[in-house]
Image 1: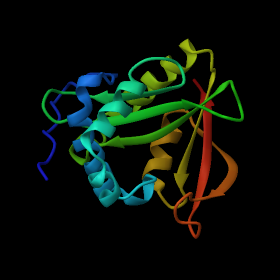
Image 2: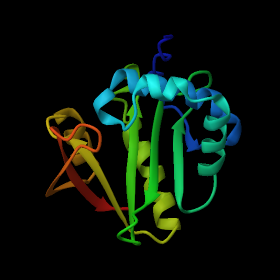
Image 3: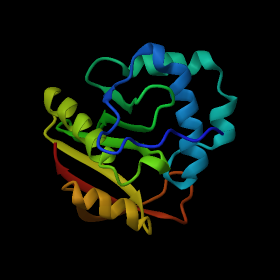
Length: 176
């Protein structure tokens, strides 16, 4: 796997909503995400790798517009280096569930995760949802600290991991 380019000394990668033409680069980023942090996502590298390109392309086209689900990417040119998604909560219409947050290892600590979350939050507000919620595997202290710095608070709610029920996830919320 080719490593992501090193971050510029003073700039972060531009963050934007995905476009349908991002499908191939998004597929590569998805495989990288799953290999780097397998407990953080709901599918395995093998499952994602087996999915045909046409399915990736259809998925990216479906999240490139509208207010139900959106995906945002960090795009310095070449390989994508970050991702965050948001989707409407089925139980709380004023809540956006943040999902699949990822920053390539070389770009961690640059503030890129905050820029990705800010884009999800702006989209959420524009869609009439003033609250954000995300779930983090209990024990992923680095992610918890990062989300806390971004204004998320632990709600005290713990839920089973959707793929590995022996693990627990904690819910965190903040205003969009």
